[in-house]
Image (cartoon, rainbow, N blue to C red; front, top):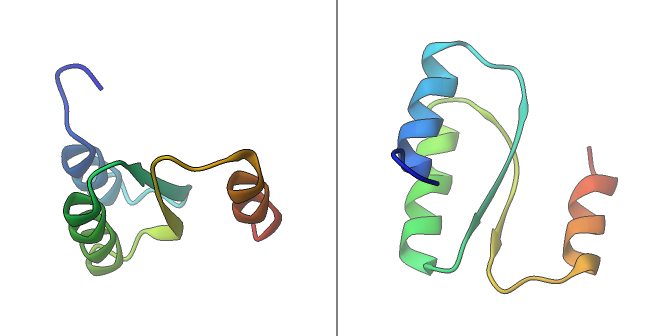
Length: 66
């Protein structure tokens, strides 16, 4: 994402008391784990974290759980 990181987006969602469902996606396992911990700490509605590359079946499982 240009000009903003995923971590910053999570912070903005928390400050706005967002009730939106969140799916995290990253090709960097360490960043994904950190973002997942932060999302949980900020009490965001985290559905799941997906590590890239992922496939259509992975996305379908995530969406079926919402």
